[in-house]
Length: 106
Length: 157
Image (cartoon, rainbow over all chains, first blue to last red; front, side):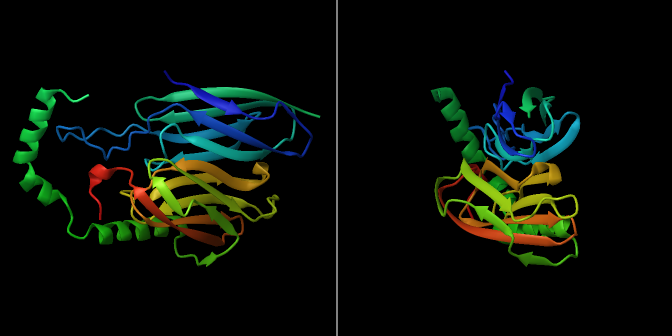
């Protein structure tokens, strides 16, 4: 089951830099491993992660097989206005997860 | 759990396979991966000059398990509309693929940095490159010793 967790402070002062931590449940199969019978296990990874703040893209990451399973991405953003942050993970085999979080800026 | 049947099939396959395996393994894999790293570096920076500094790459110097290594990159920058970090790239020299992670960011990030967890196939040098809004490139590298490699099946160098 596709799941993801996002943690960020629920409120912040205007102009404050808030730290966001995201974790997605995903095996991140590299495509380099083999089964016991020698067959290559096909690649299955999350390819991109995007964070949008009230519709504006603020942070984007391209992931490669060298990212560990259950990818953790921690980054910062500037609290500009109250609203919604949307986090989107897109990967192989039609993997797509969207998570939202709201922040109150005063 | 390995059943006896699976084990026998695997054993038979490994007896039958040696010729094919030898053909696949490159006699000078290290050189191939070094070339792949240089190609990836060229893709990131093009012809621009890369200077050392401003970027801080943090990795543990000794890694027990290469399957999950905490990595963080931070870049000194005021992160204003006029002067900010546009992109951060992390590359390795001995992983099967040189690219690790590419980040696109802007002044809205507030601070230029990312923390994540990566896989490392061998003891090697990891490089972080930052592209500034004025087009300049800065890098930092870190030496890592890995005791248990990720993707052991690929064959060690």
